[in-house]
Length: 193
Image (cartoon, rainbow, N blue to C red; front, side):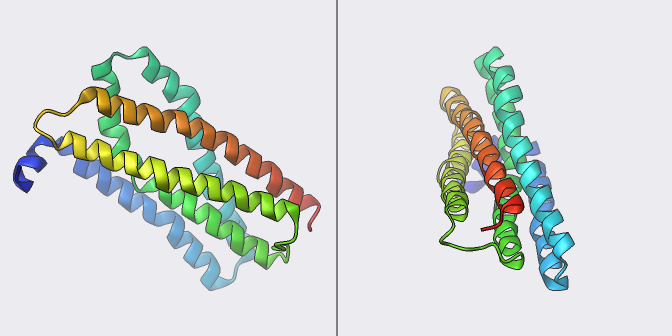
């Protein structure tokens, strides 16, 4: 199959959704660069809390709300949502995750609480590793698999729905892990190591 044939099979709206996701995904890291370059502790904390809050909220929405909606749809309906959801979230979710995590490390260092001997810092690190492994080891590869399946002459709709379902369910695990890390961060903020 040629590249032109592949592009014809992928819905036209996919490229505009990917572009939108890419442009939107630039905002969190650029905000982090601004916070770090101006050495603004306020802006650094704002970027960390905002990117982490949006990331957590989105994962909880995906699992609690969208998961229920998808479960009530037939296969073609689930595939149609996956065809739009995957490109829309493809860049923004990793951007939010990477920005929240990076800003959190810089914030902990700026506040003098980044002590690798602290069980709370270790707990935060373990949670971050789990979140990162899930995001970059499952979410992104599944997104790529969905794109590749859509590019085939006869996409396997069952496979697309299954991959998207895995991502939706995993977003619930991500949400729980993010709530756990918020608990850890609240403890560190009130009782610094």
